[in-house]
Length: 391
Image 1 (cartoon, one colour):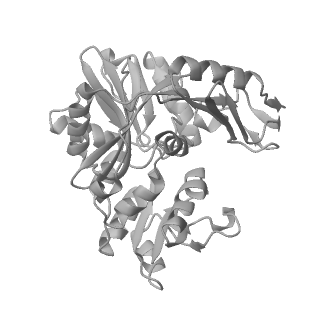
Image 2 (cartoon, rainbow, N blue to C red):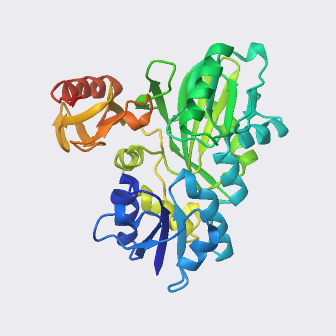
């Protein structure tokens, strides 16, 4: 039995998560990608135009798949269309499109009478036409990821300047301008089989300074029951109920408001950390859902079990240049807290400072019994490590 995974570039989620999990399940795995030269030796890779559903179907013809899935924001819709053509369990292609297209997401929720967030779509090349009282607002690409080109703008002048700068880099980009949603930023991470939905847990997210929206820390914070019904209603309206889903939302005095839905596992190594925290084979669970197994067969742990906390901190580049020195992988135990450092940029690489998740140099995390102990151990751990950027 063969599992096909559609992907662009190699990611930790695939190399350390999905591929080992597939092997443990006794399946063979082939990665379909349009960048085969970037993948490590030993990974079964097949050249494929992975944004084209017909090409995906054709690439599986020699050995029909037992399952087909993707963990890429960019490929969910095409992969879902291909899986449907092959008669395989899959995400709803329209739901995948609505989750990726932030303007379509807002329109869908507004039509359902849910989540009243003002948003204006801006076509490629068009001048933004927004109400004056929408400021402060967030400008972002309609199909963006990793907070790239997402900015807080406080007036017309800032909006026009940011639009010009983004289009200088990406002339054909479609944009969205929406009201800024101040409040506590949280995540809602779920698995579903298309009929039932299970909550894996959630995180409280800390951001860097505006005008960008770089995630710099996350603390384990399973969503309270008061948030659950509203979040499920939002996902139901979008049709996002199969496989893994990572939702970001804001808690405000008047209720919760949706930021975005990523129709995949949480990223930036958080999926691997979540697997460790919960002590459950998360990647294997996702594969099993795509094999057609029901959610009830997975025996998921309760997300709010006592005596369990985790905190994640990202080390971010503060300027452009070459990373000339950095720690490698480090694991340590301190005051009962399991600590880990994992590099996210290789030494020697030159990169521009972006103010986004692209600036991550490393992910640090601690898992222990309570927030105070974990935070203190992680602070001491981070103080012992150093990163150097030159140029």
